[in-house]
Length: 421
Image 1 (cartoon, one colour):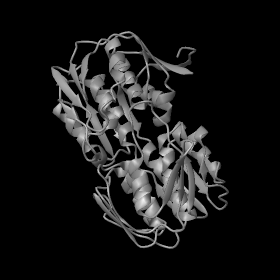
Image 2 (image 1 turned 45 degrees about the vertical axis):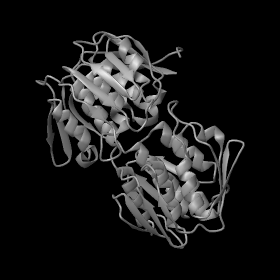
Image 3 (image 1 turned 30 degrees about the vertical axis):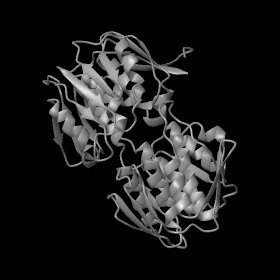
Image 4 (image 1 turned 120 degrees about the vertical axis):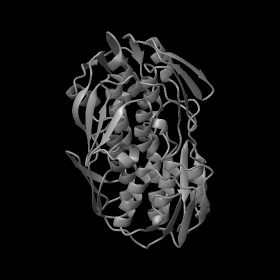
């Protein structure tokens, strides 16, 4: 098991490219189950979660060729419609195979999902939508068993705009008979990326990018190709890395519209942001970071996946910030570890009260999930002395060689093997 050893106090400067989006890739990959043949996904990040999805698809007979950032997937010979516990337990996004398998083959057996060890994230909306489309669903020995001779279009309204449920329903509806309308659909860029891919495959979808999606089912889809969007969470994390170290960086291949809420908050905190033709520049060299309240929300609001990183930045800001997570109430496992570095943070219900301190001091800290890990790395970059971040396998799930990108900007991070848990 690896850990990061970070020597803090170094300003980040330079240019860095943003990788393809993890969450977009994990939706695009299962979508190829809707068709037979070879599809190509460009700008695919080389992440542990992506490799887990490749293994999951290979269990079904899918073959893949992953070279550089081009992922070629061949679905000519699907042999089984089961997603086993051994792989699904590693990643919640595995649930995305449920809709495509059921819609195309009329049967799916998918283990109940796993993933990060925080918070109840039920899949009831996924199942409700499929049942409305005519699926018979049973839960047996930890597995979802779904059957349908043919899914039918339906009017579906989500209580909350779930990204996962929207994606699964969108894929299932593409081959359903008739028209499906999804009300209160998620509007995240990853869903737009998926919808555009389905259209390239021959799907008929209206309302892309809005909260109401209308899908006219078709009889058949054909293989296609698409570029995966840049990872907005990686982009936000890199920007905060520069801000927390009082550095200056330029992000290449970032999409400003995907991270507008983050950019707006950074500017509110007194940090200079400049938007270029294909880049975003951040300059915090002469900035006194101000405390800024944040409340997470669905897109286009401030992302819950940036909550932990924002708390790390606010730990060194001037004043007091209240950071509220309205998406996941208990997503604060990073707070006790940040306190070990000297942060002044108190959590009450789903709000963290962050009082800015003059400095953080290096210590040994423990990663508990993907974004919590990122916040500890950010704090370690700014802390005096040496910080050891244990269990960085969490980071490898969602950030492509993050230590190499940060080191290219002037950070001092070593990845070393560790027997500590």
